[in-house]
Length: 289
Length: 135
Ligand code: SF4
Ligand code: SF4
Image (cartoon, rainbow over all chains, first blue to last red; front, side, top):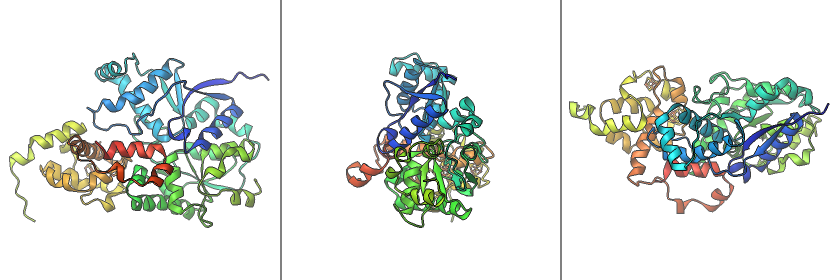
């Protein structure tokens, strides 16, 4: 059957263009394998990496609004991978859609006429709602059999629920459902919705080591042999808290790397060598690599 | 500890400014403690989230501003997610940070940040850190 590829406008964000290239490339390749193409926006800027919580801080909305208005010119949907970009873009989109006054000021700054009519979707939502996990399952060529994997959501995919929640804020399953479709054995662990320490990576290592360490311990304590993330900062903090290449540490990979692996892509193309923890011993042990 | 409270403290203009900057009604908080219970960094805060809310209700803004709490908030929104009254301590702490930063009281000296960190850390951490710590 000759299938027409669904094209979805895609915003990579700064980090996926630099230190998290493996997240970007594994997602693009996997998309093609399940029937859609991520069409990177021709022009984009940083989203600001923080949704401003002070309601008068409209300046903080201009950067993400610029991205959104650019995306609206090429489609009605925008997808992204980094949980923070997703959070910032989606929340900004709601403000622009809902407040006529703020929309006017922000549009005045960026010289656009954006109305908030875009659907901002995380890649996980595209897989669940546009492609369907059944179809993903059907495309699996190298099932992640026997791997007990912990899905780490962190904060930005889930909170605040009314603006961004891609799933139930306290008991989400979208991530585990994907892992199941890939043939892995998802492990629900208590700290999967707790913070990794976020931007305190910049100036407070103690907090990051403690919070990210608690995430890994919590996952390992429930039997996880692998932790899967959806955010370059979570990935960095989780890997760092355990020390690079530590033999007893649980490896941490991006969910798109797990996806690409299951879809049968060449292991060399998945960028595992760019991760700070080594997943290869686990894959060898399970007879996957 | 004896606290001297006056009407003036409780209805002070500066606490009103925190309400305006955060968009939160401080009086809504009824001190259940859920926010501190869920907050991943309350262990390190000189004044944990629940007490921040109470002290602001009582007009004790200066003590709250002098504490490290606002600089430790990671913006994870567990407090907001679990508050039965719909309060966002995160927004209140952001308002306090904004007040400090709008007076140019930077928390981090960019020139002091170690180069290896800047090279390895994800851009999002650096951009976000600048937004939270630098005016
Ligand atoms: S959870 Fe809400 S009501 Fe309870 S102490 Fe915190 S701010 Fe107050
Ligand atoms: S947003 Fe800040 S105050 Fe609220 S739970 Fe998270 S770290 Fe604590």
